[in-house]
Amino acid sequence: MQSRFLTIFALSAALALSVRAEDKPKDPAAAAFPGLATVAIPEKDTPFPGQVAYDAKLSELIDKPLPLEEGAPEIRRMISTRVSRDAETRYFIDFDPGPSADPGFDITDQKTGKLIGSIGAESLAIPGNGFIYATGRANRMHLEHLKYAIRDGKLVEIEQPFSYVGLQSKAKVELKLLAKKDGGETIATIPKGDSLEVVLRDGEHLLIKTRFGLLGWWKMNTSVMANNAEIEGIYYAGD
Image (cartoon, rainbow, N blue to C red; front, side):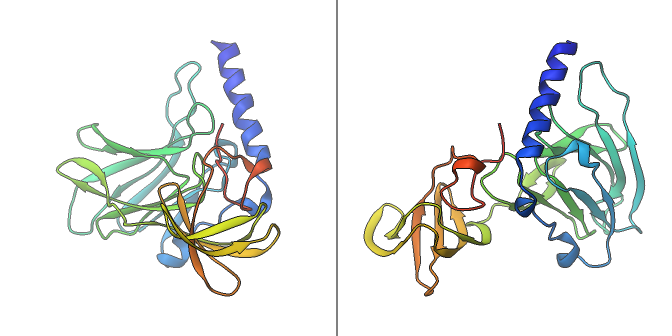
């Protein structure tokens, strides 16, 4: 058991060290929801900076580890909070670093002890409007922005038509942008080293804007890591 735990710890540490400083995402919650209190996730628990932002009038700060099972990652109870100003139900928000740099949050009904659901992410924002907002980079190709609600006692994700990326970057290989995801006319060819903007993602396809302002689709390789990324900053941040 101890050997397995040490192996997992080593993998997590290696992933954290492989993330370059310029690739570490900034949490957008502070700008999107000004006035919220925040509590940071310990840096040892996540390869990317993380925090929980919350309405101090609806929440109680806890920020303490839960009793640890042998060989298990340390789960940290961050806050007790109401998700909505219009509902009295309170929830525990617990951060779980996961077995191998797989950070996430467990949402538990404080009264019943029932697990409502889990969110794979590094940061949460709970502004009190009935929704939970999350940002995550680990185990993803880019920083993702997510929205959740609790409906009929279950945590449900609010589906978006696309996943916003908004990354100013550059090509590390030549990229051919197409008019349609499944083909069509070539809109532009971006040479290796040229700057670009990754606007959004739809599945395996990225909508990319050239320096001139043309838009076209490009199918990414979802197995690339930081050292062989085809677009700077677009790579699988996992193991």
